[in-house]
Structure formats: structure tokens, C-alpha cells
Length: 446
Image 1: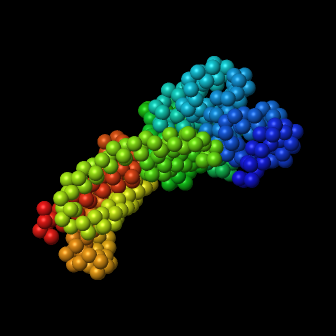
Image 2: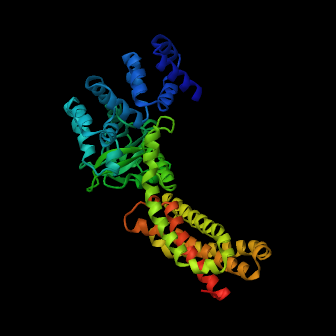
Image 3: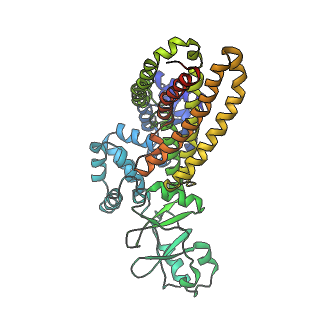
């Protein structure tokens, strides 16, 4: 893949259009779509403009969302509007959420009235709601119909219908009362009543429900699709497993980036400029530098203690490193457990008890391993200080690491934003206080 990207890039730089066209003509659309993820937006536009219109249209529909964003931003209005109109309403709504207003508004104006109305209806839902991610193209089977009539309705439905394998069953007011599979309809007597064939839906999503919650429910129930309803229970759309997996993939990428103190990248790493890489990280680093001044103040406060027993300084990196790592491990496990639904904010006390107990066992184990080497190196008194500090710091770090993400969720913040580096900084300062206070008590100094 990397070699192919280099070849395309070289041909673009050499402006060898004929060789570039020949190369692309032998590259399958799926492979070309993956290659475009690795290129900058100007190169993507150049390659796209060299493709025949029919192939460009098909390729656009399988591109990653962020590549679509770059392409629509780079293209002139007419070709951009043609490509925009090819998409389903939920894909158009997603793009409008990410495109500048001066780009997406003219694209909406060029849609047919029906397409624009369908897109704007989805855009009216809150940004991270299921309504934004659902497809409005869904067939509702009438509960009073017979199987044969229901099949005829499916056959007559628009080819743009998102999925037909699991069909919502609705009453006369469009309220979802069940679901029936296409297989059940096909294999049943045409005179069988839909009411006798349907079953209670495993999952029904609300349009105002957070899309991450809805996506996890679809995955856990192993559904092809789930009906989406409004506040009155009326059918308004469907959330497919493809959309659910895309939502969860985006969430995982975002959480992974934020847990390391950076912002998620919009494009692949190689297609992201060095400036954008810097910008995705600088914010948290500035915050952490400010937070780290707390550690400096702690060291300054205990300067006299260090002056009396200089050997104490040798163990500072070991202790704050251990505390930071223990806190980060705890925070990462808790955030992950919340993400998959294993724990809720109501489990705060139970989680903290488990993590503090784990921290105590970790601290005792590390202290046992470190006591003899520390005694050999610095004497038994300082070894005792280090051992006691290790146990205390591990308990403190795991307690802080498990508490902060749960409190963040309880107060409406994203737990991933309270990232491991931030927790590590907090634990560094408190760990130093524990270490020097323990030293003063055990060594009788200060």
C-alpha cells in the first residue's frame, strides 16, 4: 500500500498524466479508495478529476467520510453538487456537520426538493443523536397486512431503501409494534397475517438517543438493523449495523487519541500535515505543562528535606513514574469498561473499592521486590520510606485513576478527555507529597 502511494505521488509530482491514468485504470475501486486516504486533499482532487465521470461517481460513494469532506471542499460547486446528490440523506447530513457552511449550504440548494427535505430533517436532530446517523429510507409493514401484500410492498419500495432484511411492523399511526424478517415473509403462506409472523423487536432506538449508545445496542444484539422512532413511538428511520460500526469506530479512534492527550486525526497519519499533527497535540501539552508546575512547587516546598537527605532525590523518578503508570492503567481500564457498558456511574463506589484493593496489592508486591535493592543501595531507613511510599502511591493512583473518569461521566463530560497524561500529572504531585511526608516521619527530619 505504501509503495503504491509513493508511485502515485511521484507521478503527480512529475505531472505524468498518461502514466497516472494507466496506473489507475488497473487499480480496483476499493484499492483506489484506500490509497486516496493516504494522499493530501489537493492530490485527491487531481486524481478524481482524471477519472471518467461514471467511475468517479461510484468511487465517491465508497470513500471514507473525511476524504469526501476534503474532496467536496476542493472541487468546484457543480461537480461537488453532483457527487453530493449521489449520497443517502444520513451521509449528506454527516457531511454537512463537518463541512464549512459556505460549502454545504450551496450543495443543499442544488438538491431536489425531496432530497433536501430528507437531509434537513436529519440535520434538525442533535449532533450526536441517533437521528443524525439513521437512514430515513425504511419500509414499514402494516400489522393488518397479509404476508403476500407485505412482500408486494417490499418489491415496490424504492431501490434506495437502506435494508429490507428486517422490516419494522407498524400500526395505523406508524407506531412500531414489532419486526418481521424478509425470510419469514418469503417462506410463509401469502395469506398468513403479518401480526402472527412478527416478533417483539430486540432493540428500538429513539431518534434523540445518543448514537454511541444506540450503536452499542445494535452490536450487542447482533442486529442487521434496528428501527428508530420519535418520542411518540412512530417509525422515522433505521440504524443499520454498518452505520453502528462506523459510529463505534469513530468513538474508539477518538477515545484512543484523547487517552494519550491529543485530538483525533481527521485523516490517515500519512495524509495529515506536520502542522496538523502538532496542532492535535499542543493543546493538551500546554495544559500539562501548566499542571506540571504543581510538581515543581511541591519540590520547592520540600527543598529543605532534599537538602538534608540528598539520596531521596534518586528515587523520585521511580516513585512518580510508578504512580503515573498505575493511575493511567486504572483510568484506561475504567474508561474502556464504561465504553462497552460493563460499568455505569452508579457503580462508582464498587469500582473504586476494586481499584484501590488492586492498587494495594500492586503496591505491596512492588514494595516487596524493591525493598532489598533499595536497602542495599541507600540503607534500610530510606528503603522503608520508598516501600511505604510505593504502597501509598499505588493506592492513591488507582483511586484517582478510577474516580475521575466516572465523575466526568456523571457530570456530563467525556471520560476520555480526562486523559491518562492529566491523571499522571495529578498523581505525580500528590505522590511527591506522600514521599516527602513519609521521609520526614520515618527519618525524623524537616
